[in-house]
Structure formats: C-alpha cells, structure tokens
Length: 390
Ligand code: MN
Image 1: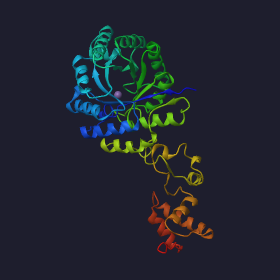
Image 2: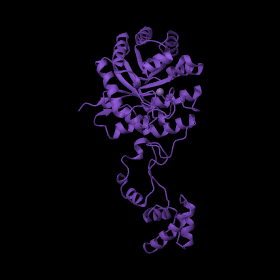
Image 3: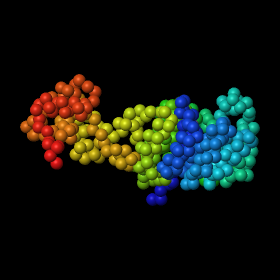
C-alpha cells in the first residue's frame, strides 16, 4: 500500500515560545532551528516578524541558516504584517507566509467587529498580496474550532481561490474532542477538493492535542502543527515527538514522515533547557521515566526480554537502555543483578538472605542507591569480586 506523507510543521519557535517564561533569544532560536532541520521537520515556523525585532531577526537568520526545510513567518491578514513577513523571509530558500484571521462569530463580533463578508475579503486580499512575492501561502482560521462549518467551507474556498495552498484549521482553545476534530477537518477537506493541503493545530487544554491530531490525520489532514515537548500557550500544543513516534510505530504501514526519530531525545533535552521548561518524569516518549521499570515483575521481564514491557526500544528515540530503578517494589532478580553490578558475588544459597536484607533497606527510602546495595552486601559479609586483580 502506498504510504501517505504527513508534513510536520514545527511551531516550537512561535507558539511554543509563547509559553510563559519560555522566550528564547536569537542565538537560541537559530540553534533550535538547526536541530529541527536535522530532525527532519518539513516546516519551521520561525516567528511572527511584525510582533518584535527578535522575531523578525529570527525569521531572517533562520531563513539564512537552514536549507532543507520550509521557513514560515506568521502574519495577520494585514498589509503591514504581510510585508514584514516577506522581508523577513528574504534569505529563505523556501519561505512560507502564514496568514491567520479569526473566523468564529464570537471573535468576529467582539474582537474584530467585522462581518463574515468583511472577513472573507480581508483573507483574500492578504493572501493575494503575499502571493505576489512567495509561492507558498498558508491560511489559518483562528478559532476554527468554534467557527460555523458553512462559513469554514466558504472561507476555505475563498482562501484557495486567492492562492493559499495550505489551509489550517486549528483548535485554538483546546476545546475539541477527537470526534469533533474529525467533523471539522472533514468539512475543510471537502471544501478544499484536493486543491490544498489541509492542516490542524491542536492545543492540550484537555490533554487531547495528540489524539485530536491523529483524528485529523484520519479525517484527511496531511500537515500537523506541533512543538517539541508539546510546549506552547497554556497547557501547550500537540507534542511533535509523540506524533512522530505514534506514526513510526503503530501507524507505519499507512503514514510516513521525514522525522529521524533517533534524534528526538537530544532535541527534546535541548528545547527543555533553552526554554527553561523541565519535563515531567512521566512525560510520554521523552520523560526521564519513559523507559524505567519499577515493579519486580516488570523488571524481571525486562531483564529477560525487553519487549515484554516496552512497546518500542529506547534506541528508536535515541534514549538510553531501560534503567532499572530499585525500589521496594523491585524483585529479587533486579536486586541481585544490582549487587553483582556493584561487584559482589551473590551465590545461589545467599540470594534469599540478601533479598530479605534488601527489602528491609528499601522500606526506608524511595529509591535504593548503589551505596545502599553495597551496605546491604557488606553487612551480610558477601564476598566482593577482586576488582584489583585484573
Ligand atoms: Mn496555538
């Protein structure tokens, strides 16, 4: 079966950076962009040029520093914004102007104070202006999740007619369920009639950003907007690493991306450091505990055959081999292996006595350190391997 190509649009440097406290300087932005290029993302949204000098310079410099990906610049549906985006993209081998306008009645009435007709007109004019300078124009319906579907269809057709080749329907506020994302994306896919790539941009306010992104793919979206570690406004965006690994493991017979998953751990650490956003230990794919095993039964299984409790190997994402964390939940197999690793000989007939002493020590702490293992072994008078005599 022919695999469908999914375009990965990374917005770590735009939406991701909007996370409180995550603001990056120019040098950091360029460094992350180069890592994203190596990772294999198709599009890097480098910033919102008219919003600040740092953003303008970041788009300009990232355009000059990268060559294997499209560089996108965000722009409101205003002439000044479009022109600033075009200037910032001057050095990019392939630049994309990403124009957005809110389209829900809520935003039209209270925020923009314009009618649907006026909105459609603004969209068309901004896209046409950008198309005078660049091939690729993406249009995003801000608050698509709460935009009337009939208007979504009408505006999709107007945007395509004006020259947009990518139409993005975001769930700006993170409100949608997967079934609702399916309905929204289907409406846009139908209206696009194959003349534009349909995209989504999900937020994790309800913890559904990745699930909604997958629902969008199943409904016909072929571009996903996401960020490293899922950072972004409020609860964040869809996590790039989760989408890439889901597609590479569970859905690899149907979809493909250009992402080199083996680079995921390194760039996840880099983004976490630069953005001062530590990862939860239990974060999927890139959390410190993603490949650790606590229970005795699981540790025993992992030591015999990793696939018993790991659905993919840590190497797939460039992480280290499963770490056996010793706690009071650990079983004798893991505890004895740790004692042997610390240099002690644990004979068959000593193992029961050793494990009982281990259990007593483990009751007193959350994680049993190597030093504690050594103490237990020494207290029982276990012989050490003669490490000096090699
Ligand atoms: Mn967003």
